[in-house]
Image (cartoon, rainbow, N blue to C red; front, top):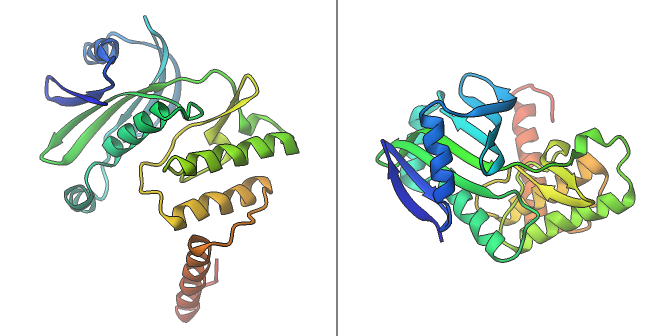
Amino acid sequence: MSIKHQVNDYVVFTKADGEKYISVFNDFLSYDIKVLKVFRNIEDTKVLLIDTQYGKLILKIFSPKLKKTERFLKAMLKGDYYEKLFQQTERIRQEGLDSVNDFYLLAERKTLRFVHTYIMLIEYIEGTELSDIPDIDDGLKAKIAASITELHQHGMVSGDPHKGNFIIQDGNVRIIDLSGKRPSASRRAKDRIDLERHYGIANDTRDFGYYLLVYKKKFRNFIRKLKGKEAR
């Protein structure tokens, strides 16, 4: 169960044992953190590897600048994407699915339900990124497919199962950068289709979600042709 805190002008969510991550967050607010590596540094997103008294952590800072009206309306209608992701991650890990990287803290500076800035502390996984493995053998492909199947069984989707979102740790597959969106039939089907596209893992499931995606693509291509554009 997540615990809600108020730290300065941030609403902060942690697990029940998350006080230590509150202290890391306070260090961040005091500019007292040790950065080991910068993974991403663009205008609206910073992803850093930091060293703390509790070990290495991923620090993500997200301050979206575009589509503010659209994001505001979505927040009012659908709620908070990252809060849902935090809660879903906590739930499935409590259910025993430890292949997903843990989500330790979510801090939000917001007006009503509209978030201006997100601060996240996430588990850092030591291992080999799948994109750094030149030849992915059948055994590893089977583990990747099994990890996504298990994820779906626990009511979540990857949303983007490319090689950068899998890490091999001690021979086990770990999944990072998950989606907080509802695990609909079409989103589960998209995960399976992407596994086939990225890794050649055969998608033998032809369910409602699969055909929904297929016909959506056909319809979009039909519209593109009417506009004189090439099909995708």
